[in-house]
Amino acid sequence: MTITAPAGARPSRGRRTLAILAAGLVVIAGVGGYVALRALGPHPSSPGAPGPTEITILPSPGTRSTCIVDDIGAPRPTLALDDGMFQANTYDVPSGTSGHAGMCYAAATGALFGYANWTKVGGAGGWFSYPQVAYGVDEYLGLATTYTPQSPAWSLPQTVARTVNESLWITATYALQGPPAADVDGYDLSFDNFFSEGLPPRFESGPFVEVEIFLAHNISYPFEWLPWTAPTLVNGTVAPHLWDIAYWCHGADNGSNANISFDFSYGGQSSHGLAAGTLGVNLSAILAEVETLMPAASCWTGPLHGFSRLYLGEQDLGSEDGALGGTSFNYNWTVPSYCLQTRVGAPGSTGPGCPG
Image 1 (cartoon, rainbow, N blue to C red):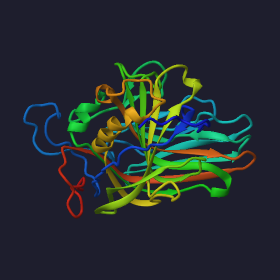
Image 2 (image 1 turned 90 degrees about the vertical axis):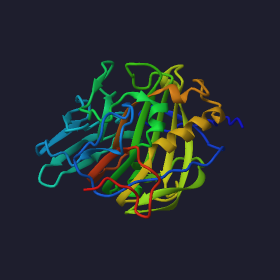
Image 3 (image 1 turned 90 degrees about the horizontal axis):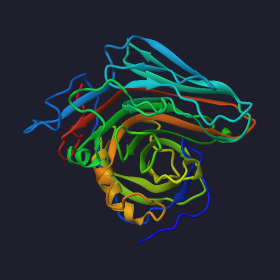
């Protein structure tokens, strides 16, 4: 079934035109639990690689307590973790806006604190910021390909096909204090993944794919989502949970490149997702489903059956925000636990987890 994207745009890191998914259901499984710093076994490509590989991004015992702040128009600051890094980002901020985004790591607790504080918003727009934890290719630092610290047990970039075969699970424990709904036109805390056709990877250089997984959110775009149900780890228990799914075609600001974003929204678009707790998803299952949905996206001009050959370059955890004009707002979130785990079997009553 071919679907034509209607007119309209979603302001984001790349402006996107909406299309609605109308094919297939996704089966997602999650993992959970508090994480420990360890990487088990050889690289997943090694013959006969045993058992799961666990990569803890947070806590990061080798990282000192520190804060970074990104003021409007300033270079985006970064700080390396043992694996991955955190980075404060501002972008697409309307003229006349004052404020900043920042992040702090607390060595005593192992938790990362992200926030945005906009004291005056000059005009409506977004997204204003994306304070994030990144793993893999840091594609926000311009044309030069820059890599975060990575575990030799599992590193990026690698093909979608290889990631799908690894049963890659992502789990985070977090708490989000969102901005007042009356002052914003949307916000989210999400896992965000970026894919490109060639090496080295380039951000929004087509064919380019984004797969974003909204954990906590207040998404108010004028469109419809397709509801579906999938197994999801929530606070230690795997059970069927409601999600919504849609895809976006990137707009003219990206030229003629083939760019598309698939959005997965926990709890459904009309909900606010999970504001605080532990949530785990099986990224491999999500990517396998994206491959099957490509032919239904009439706006996609990249390879219809070639998503598996694209490269996963970057896996993020971070937040977005967009605001109404003439207001002010702030929000914050804390993540004490965030890990990647490969070669995990089907979840049990509590999920295989990242033990700590």
